[in-house]
Length: 474
Image 1 (cartoon, rainbow, N blue to C red):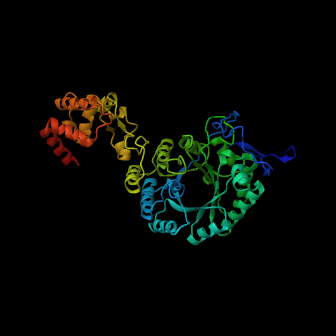
Image 2 (cartoon, one colour):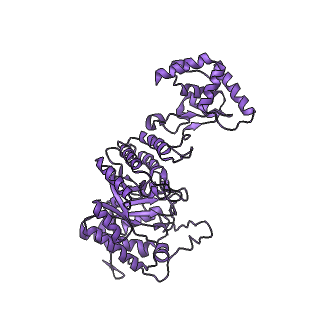
Image 3 (cartoon, helix red, strand yellow):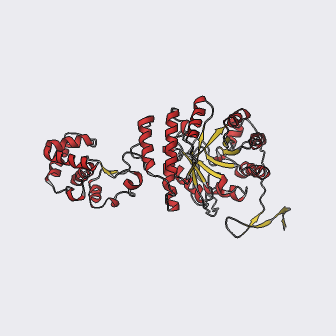
């Protein structure tokens, strides 16, 4: 059937199992002036969110997974990791991702001797997951590095917004497209799988450049038989997930469009988000829900400017969406956090979810009172079982008798039959000393050491008995 001179096909959709119209053939729009979407991004005010009330269907793939950029994007905003640190973190990524490879890949730089040594040492571990991949710029010299290292898949930077094409690269869209396709063909000719990083996709002309470029990649993929991945890079964190939002900012619109209009299958679609507007986690989850199999993350979210999507956050999101950990070892999250602080000097914000020292610590007396009755009242899940992080209580001016009681029972690991109660005299005496400190002007919470010293002052023999119980239970 022809409509307006175009072939209008009706095909059975593998995704929806119903007949769908398929008559989309978007061509490159080689414009003379860049499309900068000044109605959204006028630069002198906060970027605007516009709505066109077009909603696309949710379609989460059967298999979803995480990829890691800790050793690439994660090294662009901090002092580089040493080779030994990379190897240790890679081991923990393997442990966290589990035997089913929920953390499927990790990308590395190849530019220095240190980069290449790190790749080689991680390879020598013999892990299936995460698979080691690389990242290069779109030029032949960089591509030679990948061939020399014998890496099967490489990321290639293919900036897709006119901000980059016109203003940074000083090219036209046609010139940029030809340049990108040339380097991708080089990769295919060498039997290497390209992963195309569509940089700044949330400011790109979706139908004028993104979809036509993706069509060309689909054609190359069909000709060569080699899969070509598309990484949707939300470089400045502009992506939004509100229903009915307009392109180019709509996360679901981008993922659906690449699947529906460019026919890129879910397993070749990946989301790479930044956290400039606090949206990286929800944007990544939305990319999964609307058809991308993969989300790209870094440990603790460390990356350019505000960082990437925190990998540990998407591990928890995976468990929430799938209802299973699929063999992942979630306690590795706690060990990674400890290693990052101790061995790399990275300071984790104390209130950072899952990894901050206070993420499951309460100060409020009324909360501590609830925890004494049942920790489930104020703990997000069994953090001790899942993350090897026991719920804690910080003692300060607001902790009250309940907070002090919980701290004593928790710190000394007292069995149920010998746990103290908040009505016990020792608790009252310690609270009196705590209250006196704050009356004298103290403002910070007490450390474990300080609380132990207060207990010694109140009743040294009692303190020693509790210390012996703790020793027996360690």
